[in-house]
Length: 65
Image (cartoon, rainbow, N blue to C red; front, side):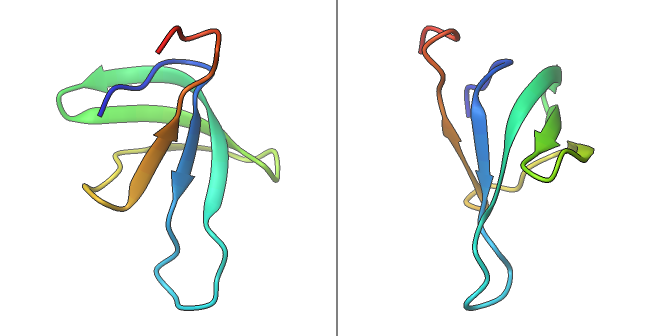
Protein backbone atom coordinates (compact mmCIF):
# COMPACT_ATOMS: atom_id res chain seq x y z
CA UNK A 1 0.00 0.00 0.00
CA UNK A 2 1.52 3.32 -1.06
CA UNK A 3 0.65 6.20 1.21
CA UNK A 4 2.03 9.67 1.82
CA UNK A 5 1.24 12.67 3.99
CA UNK A 6 -1.98 14.37 2.94
CA UNK A 7 -3.66 11.17 1.70
CA UNK A 8 -7.00 10.13 3.18
CA UNK A 9 -7.11 6.80 4.98
CA UNK A 10 -10.42 4.92 5.24
CA UNK A 11 -10.62 2.13 7.83
CA UNK A 12 -13.54 -0.25 7.40
CA UNK A 13 -15.65 -0.90 10.48
CA UNK A 14 -15.43 -4.18 12.37
CA UNK A 15 -19.19 -4.05 13.02
CA UNK A 16 -22.02 -4.38 10.53
CA UNK A 17 -23.91 -1.12 10.10
CA UNK A 18 -21.10 1.08 11.44
CA UNK A 19 -19.68 3.65 9.02
CA UNK A 20 -15.97 3.49 8.11
CA UNK A 21 -13.53 5.72 9.98
CA UNK A 22 -11.74 8.30 7.84
CA UNK A 23 -8.77 10.52 8.51
CA UNK A 24 -5.84 12.34 6.95
CA UNK A 25 -2.33 10.89 7.01
CA UNK A 26 -0.18 13.40 8.88
CA UNK A 27 3.11 11.46 8.72
CA UNK A 28 4.46 8.17 7.41
CA UNK A 29 6.53 6.74 10.27
CA UNK A 30 7.63 3.44 8.69
CA UNK A 31 7.16 1.65 5.37
CA UNK A 32 7.90 -1.93 6.43
CA UNK A 33 5.71 -2.51 8.31
CA UNK A 34 3.56 0.46 7.34
CA UNK A 35 2.98 2.80 10.30
CA UNK A 36 1.27 6.14 9.90
CA UNK A 37 0.11 8.98 12.12
CA UNK A 38 -3.50 9.83 11.25
CA UNK A 39 -5.68 12.79 12.23
CA UNK A 40 -9.26 11.53 12.29
CA UNK A 41 -12.37 13.51 11.35
CA UNK A 42 -13.09 14.05 15.07
CA UNK A 43 -9.66 15.80 15.37
CA UNK A 44 -8.05 12.99 17.43
CA UNK A 45 -4.72 11.50 16.34
CA UNK A 46 -3.57 7.88 16.26
CA UNK A 47 -0.50 5.95 15.18
CA UNK A 48 -1.69 2.85 13.33
CA UNK A 49 -0.41 -0.13 11.38
CA UNK A 50 -3.29 -0.96 9.02
CA UNK A 51 -4.09 -4.63 8.31
CA UNK A 52 -4.40 -5.88 4.75
CA UNK A 53 -7.92 -5.37 3.46
CA UNK A 54 -9.03 -3.26 6.43
CA UNK A 55 -7.87 0.06 4.99
CA UNK A 56 -7.87 1.90 1.70
CA UNK A 57 -6.01 5.02 0.64
CA UNK A 58 -7.56 7.93 -1.24
CA UNK A 59 -4.57 9.78 -2.66
CA UNK A 60 -4.53 13.57 -2.48
CA UNK A 61 -3.59 15.70 -5.46
CA UNK A 62 -0.62 16.99 -3.44
CA UNK A 63 0.89 13.50 -3.02
CA UNK A 64 1.10 13.09 -6.78
CA UNK A 65 -0.25 9.53 -6.87
